[in-house]
Image (cartoon, helix red, strand yellow):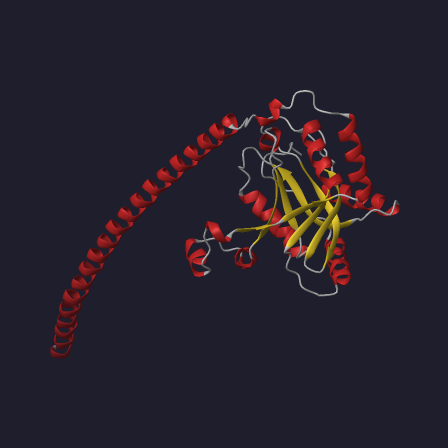
Length: 306
């Protein structure tokens, strides 16, 4: 199996585990409402995701992992996670689903939340919207209705602003994915635009009181020597790269528009040719019908006279 590329989602665990996770989550909430209006993440999960990228992420290569937790009413609580190991073509026997099941079984033995609630993935300057990510999130959301995907941007985080966002597929897009019809007619019928593909869920990062006390103690012991560097915006490089990627996408869209206009012109031309051919065929049909009728009549009279 080849190493992971950007946008390739993790394999979903077995349907039994998925159904159990969703059922237990709803039981804890008691409301039975599958809509997720807020995602609460433990600080441990955030640190694990950041550490995973620092250890295994290189350049544009993405890292991925599984999110664990539970559902309480309309709030999704993510309490733990574990990464997917990087594997190459030599690891042909690596089974992602079996790996997930063994990890969840081990976490359950040490009394850690082991219910599947989604997955996470790093991104490179926000370029994460791909068909592979859509298919993976659909698989998760179809098996576990409350599932989310966390998108972590290490480049923006390195500039001093934590970039961690939670996304879900909209109900409209879920219906289209179930039908497996992504034709322009189906998208138009379902009123699907780029604004109706993903919905962002608000994130709240929560730490226990003991962790807050520890952080307060560490802050007092490790005072910053020079605080002037904290005033630096340090966003010019990130902004410049983001604008460059935006320009590339606009150029691609312009090329697609040109291709679409060319297609429409060719279609219109072919429609005219089709109409002209139909007119010729109709004229030939009318002309031959009269002549053939006369020919058959003359043949019948000739046979009668003879």
